[in-house]
Length: 292
Image 1 (spheres, helix red, strand yellow):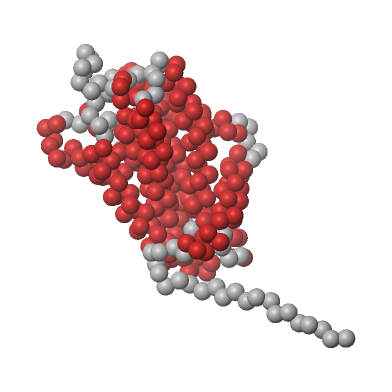
Image 2: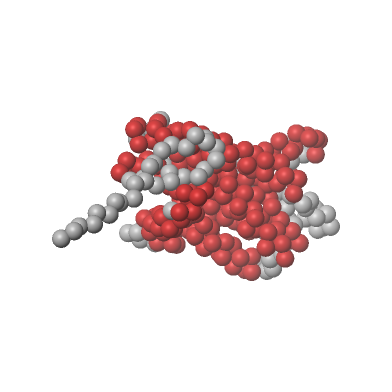
């Protein structure tokens, strides 16, 4: 009897020389894995929780009440002519997406140490799946925002269709920063203590103060505020949803200026964060399994 031996295919896995350019063909080949990692992150986040997906509503809603009462009713900070609760909720919804994506992606590599040491996969998928999983929370919170707008008798403007483009900027910023901190977290474990402080400080620099309340006497220095990419995203989200109800004066005759200037300043910063995150992550990737 004659036996026929079949040689099994041999796959060679080696580090790429490019530190910036990800292997897109490899990522496409493993695209199903990205789907399952994203779905797993969603399940892990809400599995064995008392309130489940309600947390996606409670966090921005509770923060809206605190901010609206303290900063809107008591401190009487500017809300561009909107109800302060609606003003802060419109800023907190995109912010919570960014904050959740940044926090989850920054801790993703350390939390998935078994995957890094036992099997091969495109390492970018681990922080990327965290950012994609947070889109579910954003969709739920955004639906609540629309209901709140109807409650306050504010019909969404036609420019609401620009919101996905703005969220893509928040996605790029969160993913880029998440790549940096996730790679640093593998080597320096105290980074996980820095992230909550950074997110909290970043929030106060993004959500509370509208650009219209910065004195014009500051001149061009006013636009330094726009170097924070999330300022442009949050200002543009509010404008795209409710610009027909936003005014600078009590007589409601001076409309709030368009936020495209702020967005134009913050967009290159977001792209820089993303590119530097890819560069730093790919440079550190080859030592993840050795030191995690």
